[in-house]
Image (cartoon, rainbow, N blue to C red; front, side, top):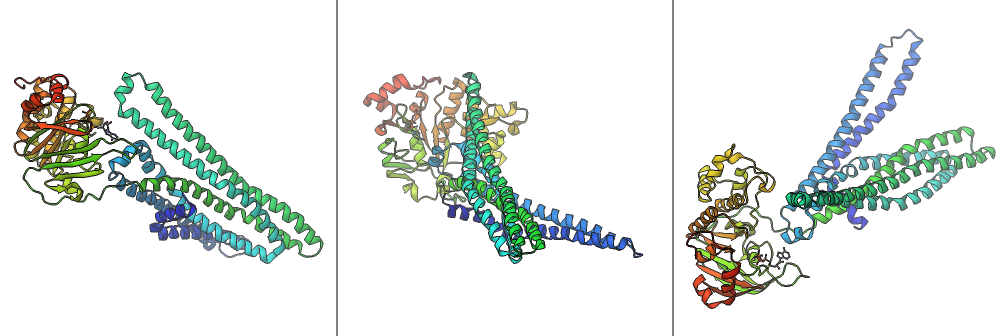
Length: 580
Ligand SMILES: Nc1ncnc2c1ncn2[C@@H]1O[C@H](COP(=O)(O)OP(=O)(O)OP(=O)(O)O)[C@@H](O)[C@H]1O
């Protein structure tokens, strides 16, 4: 990222806190000044020791100074640290606010683990750069200037020598600075890789174990950790170089001033006392220059982090969801008009002009070989992706002209792998309809045949279901996903049937639920079961991104050879009696 942009991005995070940082700096400064007053008070104390005057007053004053100085300094430190935490919080808030609104296509291009580390780890690196380093830069800068002015008043020639040495060594340090930033950026990337590797392993934990892949997966995590260590150490090395240059600059200046100053004393240009005072000032300079270097190194670390944060901030988001408006109660209608779509520019088309019409209500089944583009139809209706050609209509209105929140409020969507989220059963059910009443929850539990499960669980609806619902069976997860979709009281239900076989009781239950729903809701189902297609009012046969036939089971068996073949071979045999 160009330096100007880095600067601007960092300033954006600092700006809201500028006054409080100034207050923190002021308190730190006042604390330091009270510190300086102490030697004076101590001197007054010593002066009075020999006399008759009471020393109580001075002692009290001294104690008060010590207490006040410490208190003010610690309040200053607290204010700065608190502000630092607030900077991190604000950065996290902005990022998190955007993360969940990212376009699906953007997220598919990245690694979730890396995105997570930008929110958690990179934001923490903003802590110092937006607070302490600003204070260090300002106070270091001011004190340096003041000291340099005083040195100039003492002897401009010696000042010239000092500045010459400092500029020479300072020049070398500016060469080192970008290396700190580069190494930090690499280290942060590696931290992202650790999260990515862990996320991959935990996301398929059972498969990792069943495949005996623990060693290999932990090796991947370890390699990323090693990489983070390597670059962290490299950053530390360059920081150490920058730091030691301060000492070096002062030492070399000292020697140069000693040599040249000595010659000037000998020639009578300056007095010995001037040389001594000048050397003392030179040592005073160590502290402010150190602070300047500290600020610069913190800036480099912050620059690396801000670049990664800005990248995440620039990812494309969907339009702000907002709350959906009032909606129709009638079942929705859906139509595709010559829809063309590919997931990414570089990938081949998945839909080559898909057209079909579904009036509501009723059940429409989508069938076709694996990869024909059936699930993609659902993704396009939900506007998870945008079609590159043609039109998709819901209620006769182009999905692009629907406010996104309104469009999605009409739809209940059950994904193929029926995701259940960590948390309680109740949280999962209310996920899409947080305001549903207990009565409504009970109603869908009965409809999805989950009431017996809830009764069996020790904590009923408040039982925890584990990461991704791992404590539920596959069939239970599917029914939880259906119940969740139903609670939204959708006008359009998209059901991506699981390819795995349900047992006879479950399948029958599911079939009844879907048939009942389709009486007054438009149900689209990607069907893998004969029992589903035979019940459908309409079947859309898809093949290689096109619709090849539409009809009922009887019609298609007679007219479409591909359908006939699918019915005979690919549909999972129905376990439900009387389904054919
Ligand atoms: N997110 C994605 N990014 C890139 N390509 C994808 C993505 N999702 C699906 N595809 C590709 O698009 C094609 C159609 O996928 P889709 O999931 O729509 O098929 P399907 O007909 O539902 O298959 P199945 O019956 O196996 O579920 C496939 O070739 C698949 O590899």
